[in-house]
Length: 119
Image 1 (cartoon, one colour):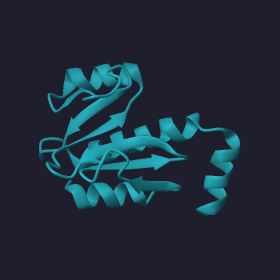
Image 2 (cartoon, one colour; image 1 turned 60 degrees about the vertical axis):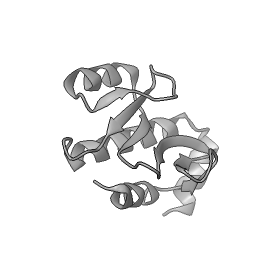
Image 3 (cartoon, rainbow, N blue to C red; image 1 turned 180 degrees about the vertical axis):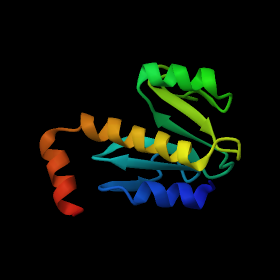
C-alpha cells in the first residue's frame, strides 16, 4: 500500500471527507465530522486508526508494525507502519474497522443522511 492507494481506499467509503485541520502536512479522513484515519504527507510510512481496545492489544502483540497511537489515546488508537511487511488486506481491514467504529458511534440521523446521500 502507498499513500495514493490509502487515500483511494478511504475516500471510497460513504460520507468520507478529507481535510488538513492540523496543517498542510497531515491528511485527515473523517466520517460524520469525526476522524477515523490520519497520516503524514511529509513521511507517508504510517497512519493512525481507531481500534477496539482488545483488538488493538492483540494486533500490537502480533505485529511489530502496529504500536499505540502516536499523539493519540493509546487505548483506542494504533499507529500502523505500512512498510511492505503487513499485507494490504490487513491494512484495509484496519482502515475499515476504524471507519466502522467511528460510523457506528454517530447519531442515527447522521448515519441515515450518510447512507442516503451515498447510495
